[in-house]
Length: 133
Image (cartoon, rainbow, N blue to C red; front, side, top):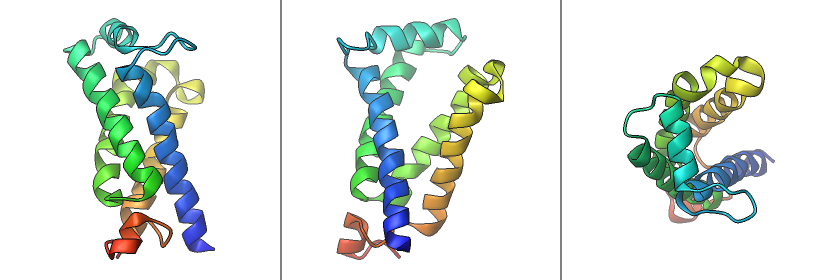
């Protein structure tokens, strides 16, 4: 049961990051998100180099999210996601307060730390190739 629980936690975190990263790279007709919108949001928050940060965040979130979903290079993939979340709190979320502000990034940081400590679990590509230890 532990492998299933860790696998669900890992895959859910990965799916959340793919869902947030993909629109930062590609414009979505249904949400209106896209690189320009993300850049403008970051610029309004005073983030330096907002265009580069938006694209970098989008690619890192999408790629590392996919890696988490399948459980490949889990401990490596979760580190940049934790860093993005740690940076997002003071740069974008802090002024919104805890509820509806930095509560969700904080929760994902904790999930990421659990995965970093525990590893990917037995239901993962890492386990298949012997990297889960």
